Amino acid sequence: MRQPKIIDYALLTILSLIWASAFFNIKIATYSFGPITIAFLRVFFGAIPVILLCYYKKIKIEAFSKDWHLFAMIGFINLVAPFFLIAYGVKSVQSNLAAILMSTTPLSSTILGHFYTKNEKFNLIKTFGILIGFSGIIFLFSDNLLIDQNNFTSALLILLGSTCYVIGGVLTLKISKKKNENVTGSILIWATIILIPLVSFIEQPWQVVPRTDSLISVIYLGIVPTGIAWLLRFKILKDNGLIFQSQVSYLIPIFGTILGYIFLKELITIKVLISLTAVCIGIYFVRRADRKKLS
Image (cartoon, rainbow, N blue to C red; front, side):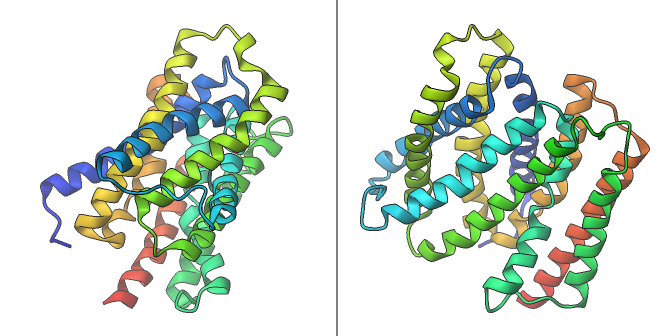
């Protein structure tokens, strides 16, 4: 690892923008495609750059090895379920709200880490951060202008999607000794396999005549936020470490809110801004506790 340079901060900002851009593109994709189709096309197009990288670097993909059941389980929990839940939820919820709701992942992972790992226990700073962050989410749900009885369940499903990411991350620890490229390629392959029969029997997307913007968005979702962003994340992790890379947690909800306003003219209320601030403060305290532990 090296001391972060200007190029490293630039790459971190690009990664944050890419992941934040996923939310308004999901919204656009829902104009023509169902949630299962969006999930399928994301993992299908996302697998392409990862598999090509493994081929280029001569890394063996172990999707069908003796650990196939782990890859399949992680593929379902870490990709299939959250991609479906987020796409289903964003259909009825503004994309900027989805970005804020999904940004709770570091807070949820801290809670699960306390119970399922040996060295990620709560302390006063972490507890304070969790309480502040989730207080912001609770306050967001009180915004009757944006979340009402018609889309309340959709907002909860997005929160459930963020929890799936956390559970998938915990399961990934079981195969943490394997190369990241191999693991990512394997779970993308299994996610694609799982979704093929579902999308074929339930939504049958070949019967859809999609809008051009929806088609562009769903291809973008697969190649860029799902595939290329992972490769960029891996480079940042390798060069600068986990603590530096984890700073995307602050930037994603901020960029997601800004991009939703720019591209979809989504409403930004005072409660949205207060909730966004509370979540970022909560993440800050959780990350600060992690930095103190490492130092």
